[in-house]
Length: 404
Ligand SMILES: Cc1ncc(COP(=O)(O)O)c(C=O)c1O
Image (tube, rainbow, N blue to C red; front, side, top):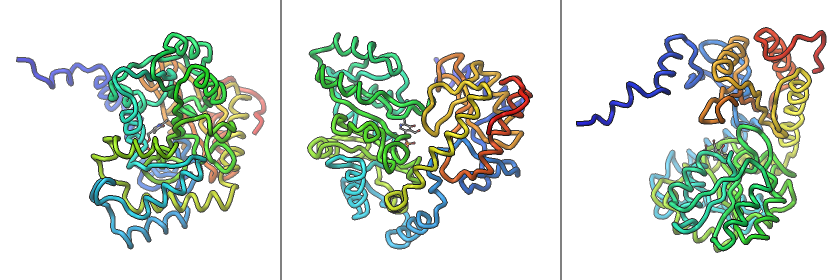
């Protein structure tokens, strides 16, 4: 009889994990003993964090902390039930109203995670004969959502409008949705939202943008990638998450009222899962208060990351098409990427190594990302580190001077 667990001993990725642990080069699940946003303590050492999605640095903002504590005092630690039944607080409703306005849509629905938001919306809307037309680099949660929906799926080359048009033309008559990320989570580049919207209009497709990394970062006041491009009305559904700029946990889908009502009554990840805890909802509301009153957080995440991007490119790093606070350092080989991660880690800079299947084979990279709260001194240290470590391990060539 076959043993279901037999594969564990021979699984190639688990063999790599075992080897990494034996050699002491295992970059994952590193516990942080302290974190104040831009700096963390790991293995007793203080280091600069450039591997976080805390883009606005609000996880430690006194008003956000206080809002979470106050909500816990008032409502307790959990809603212990689905939004559908006992798990809806006035706080959730307020958050939905505020987010709909912020994102420029009629209505919004909040889920307990960003992942569940994508699962819920897509499985509610797409059925067996419907077609999801997806950019090759969309987030894993969207791929899972489409698979779970059981609909047809076609992929188009990343941000390639000719390829998208080819797929749309070949499937003129299907009921279909084009699905993209607003900001791509590994490359830090933007979807070509206006052109995609135009193609959707031409071929009668609905348009879904996962703006997990754009909400709070892109557009005036951080109102998202569609608003950044001035075409929010041409996007049918916009997804956002609270686990990045909004310093919390949870997610949102915004769109027309009738579509949101439909999702609310059909999304299984919404109905069959407990609602966002009060502290998480209150933290997002506090973040909205802060960024609506003070645009400097959104401005600063761009100025700080632009300094690093410019310096890295001048040093000769390959940062792909990044135009956002996500700046990949594309290395290629998996082994070299892990070795580079280790060298930066030992230097005191925390990055995230991204290997296949997170990226295609031979496209491994260090994912770096920046926060509004990185000080100028930290930015200078990061740039100096990229120069020193990069030149030492041969990622870049040594030069006499480096522009900061
Ligand atoms: C593009 C994208 N979509 C969705 C998600 C899922 O969001 P969450 O982590 O809030 O569940 C993520 C998070 O990694 C993401 O990067």
